[in-house]
Length: 75
Image 1 (cartoon, rainbow, N blue to C red):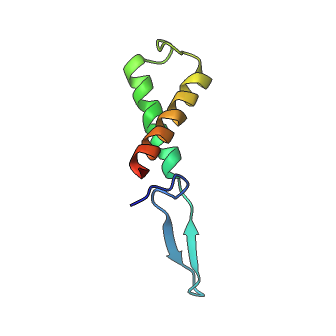
Image 2 (cartoon, helix red, strand yellow; image 1 turned 30 degrees about the vertical axis):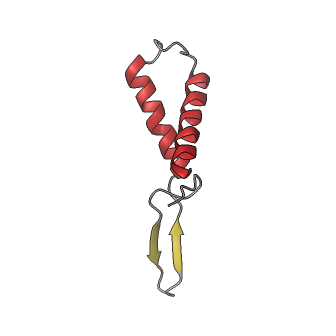
Image 3 (cartoon, rainbow, N blue to C red; image 1 turned 45 degrees about the vertical axis):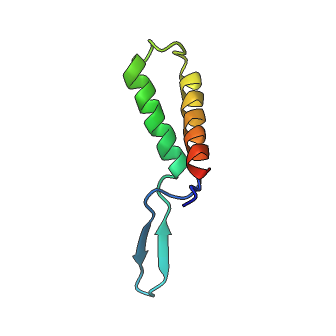
């Protein structure tokens, strides 16, 4: 099953009185995986102790890790 990074993790559906479907977006799979990667990096190194203590670099690493995982899962 392909992984689509911009699909939502847990989209919520509800029905209004008119029976029209409403989808609440939520968080994308890519965002979720990047957040997990960031959590792991900070938990492992501690904030300010990582080789790249700069928040922007930690964010960049997190997104790169998420993208790499999505690529591996899609192959």
